[in-house]
Image 1 (tube, helix red, strand yellow):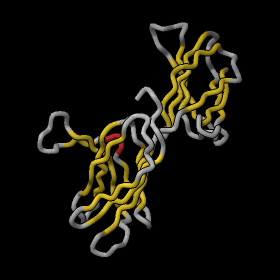
Image 2 (cartoon, rainbow, N blue to C red; image 1 turned 180 degrees about the vertical axis):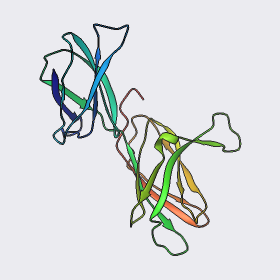
Image 3 (cartoon, rainbow, N blue to C red; image 1 turned 90 degrees about the horizontal axis):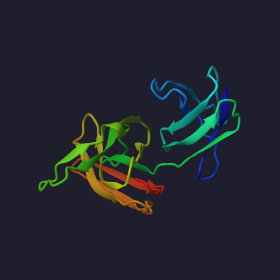
Length: 196
C-alpha cells in the first residue's frame, strides 16, 4: 500500500479529487499502474500493489501535474504539493439589455503562428459550458502565451479579444472585450511558475 496527502503549494489547502497514479518502476516493460482519487481532506490510498518502487503521478484540473515522486511500496507518508494554474474569470453581458448572459460556452483561442489576418485556433481542452445566473465564468489557463477569450451563446454573435499572458507575469489585470451584441468582462488571477 502507498498512502499520503495532496495539497496546494500556495497555502497548503488539501486538494479533493486529485488523480494519483502509482507506476511500477520494477516492471518498466509493461508500465502497469494503479490509480485512485484524493478525498475531501486531500488523502489518498493505493492498495493492491506488489512490493517495489513506484513513480507517483498526481493530476488535478486546476493545478500543474507532478511526476517527481519516487516511493517504495509501504510508504504511508507521501506528501504531494501541486502548483495552482492561473485562471481567467469574468462575466458575459448582453449589451442590448445590460444583463448577464446566463447560458453560454467559453474557451481560449490562440493566434495561428505566422497568420497575417488574425486567424486563431480554439484550445478545445479549455472549452466549458456555463449556466450561471450572473453570467460568470472561470477558465484554467494551460500555459503562458497570447490568448483570446471567446464566449459562445445561442442568440449572440461569438465574441472575444486578445490577451497576452507572459510566464511569471502578474495576471491580476482586468480585460473588457466588446462585440456588437455582447461583452465579456474578466480578470486574471494567479501567476505562472517556471517551466511553462
